[in-house]
Length: 379
Image (cartoon, rainbow, N blue to C red):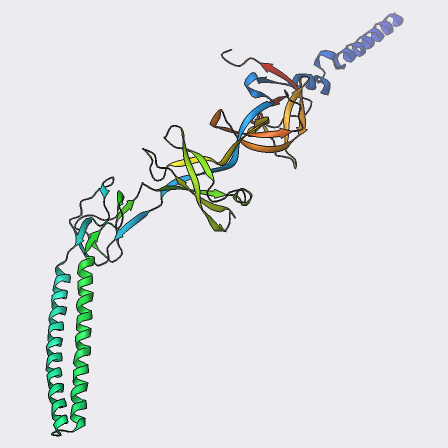
């Protein structure tokens, strides 16, 4: 009986041990994924066909790129030269004016009265000169006859010279009053178009208050900021082709001036391009183009495909289905001749012709990553 109980107890213990071992043994199906399985899941990338740019020969428009806004070569602000109330001012933005045209007046009442006062003072001074002149002439005759001394003649001469000086001062005061009266009339200094108003009719103006701005649209220029390297390639007289905001086609231009100084801070150089006037041109329109453009045939890629996060530019391209990083040497850059308004392309060396280069917006991809190309939408 004891032997049977011992055998049963031993069997129970062995069963518990076997059950516990099977419970805590890790299962192959629940084991954590290995690094190899992870790599299998993330070792490729899918890109659209439009994200791959084949390297092939392109015709580039080579030149110095420029951009900026158009401005009038001649523009002027009409300012109040005297203080007073603005009258007869009716011009509005967009109105045309001619040089010398009267555009308004400052109330002339005060200036007319000052001029009259100065003229009366000048007349009084002239009368005193006449009296002093007659006295001097009489004394001079008496001295010749010996009736009076030379001292009396000197005194009359002094009085005459004093009266003449007073007359000149009065005449100068009259000239100043006349000039103020003339300045009360506001005239256009140049021919052109009204671009902005700085005052309203009936407003009391101080001296140098801006009343009206006039721009001459018959002469426009582009002020372009160039890097020192580009400025060294530009010469006065060089021709350029510009694309101007809102206008179809290109517009010819010519380098007319180059600033001899560099700008503080940016260290750039300002160049000024005279633009051939075209219908629809306005001051402030944005323009861009190239100076001295010529055509170059070369293996080229969009500038956006170049990566510059390393010391030497490189591109990401697909070789046997894998991402490769290859350093390249860049050359001529510019838009395609067939697409003058398109993006900038650049000549590259160091990559086989026909290579499939990945677009720049994909970001930096790990070298060796598998690439799968999917059909673009609409295909």
